[in-house]
Each structure stands twice: as structure tokens, then as C-alpha cells.
Length: 209
Image (tube, rainbow, N blue to C red; front, side, top):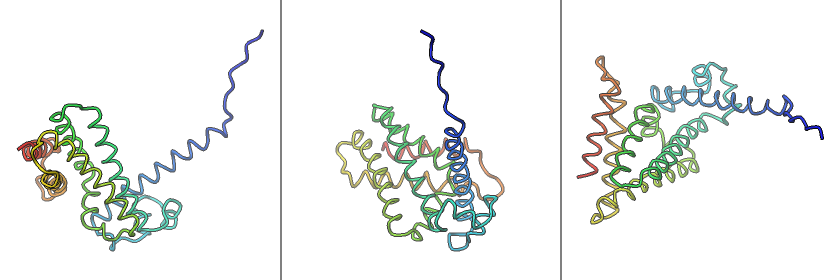
């Protein structure tokens, strides 16, 4: 019996995947540009036309991806919070020993902070500009991320209450989140490797004490 030649999908079947990838890339470009603008000027100081220009498109083109400026802000903060929670869970799952898991979480979070200083500034300053439903979503994701850290810390400090461990986690977040942006001000800026080493050392010391 003659073998049946393998079937290949028509070109039109592959096209949506390429279009989806291109759309996702444009969305990512817009969000990166928007985070930088919001960090520089504040949410209220940025218009849809500003967002489009920063991303290399017209203002109305932004509406192909987002319903408005508030939706752009929501996407920035929801995406960041989701990435932290999913990434943190992956770190903990891959690192069974509590002390190693804590070190890996600190490394993961410092990496996020160094790469997303604009997003962190926007979160701190403009979260009140979110719609109520988006604010709830962001805060829910962030609470679960904090509880992930509390779970690891509880294994290292079984005699301490969850309330105390949450305070320690939030204090460490404050250290790791604020320093990357402030370290980039002024004319003499330290290398990321220098900032990373200092942050990881200080965060771990505060959490292990």
C-alpha cells in the first residue's frame, strides 16, 4: 500500500498565529512605552496621543489594543502582578529546601525590580487611578504573592506569627522595589550587578534574622 504523504496546514491556518504574535509584540511595546511615560509624568499627565507617539503609532491606534488609558494602566499592573505570582510559584516549586527557596525568591524579585523600575514606580503612585475591579484584581494577585513568601518564611521561622512574617516580607519588598529606581538618579549610577548584590545581601539578611 502506498504511503500517504503527510498533510500540511494551508498557509491561511498559520497566518492567525503570526498575526497573534505580532499583536502581542505591539501590545508589549505599548505597555513598555506607557510604563516609562507614566513613571516620568504620572498617569494624569499622559494622553492617549502621548502613548501612541511613544509606541510609534497614532493615538487612535492604541484603541485597537486597549479601551482607553485606564485599561493601559490596568494591563501594566495586572501583567506585572501575574508575572510575579506565577514566577514566584515556579521558584518555590523548583526549590524544595526553605532556605534555598528564600534565596531564590529574593533573586527572582530583585531581577524583577531591576528590570521593571518604571512599573514599580507607576504601581506606587498611580494604582489609585485604576478602576475598582482592576484594583481588586491587582491587590488580590499581590496578596497571594505575599502569602507565597510568608509560607516559605514560616518554614524557616516556625515560632513567628504570620502577621510578623508579612511585615518582614513587606519590608524586604520595600527595600528591593525602591532602590533600583532611586539608584538610577544622578550622574554616577552604579552597575546593575552592584545594585543586585547589595539588594540580595540586605534582603536576605533581614528575612533570615
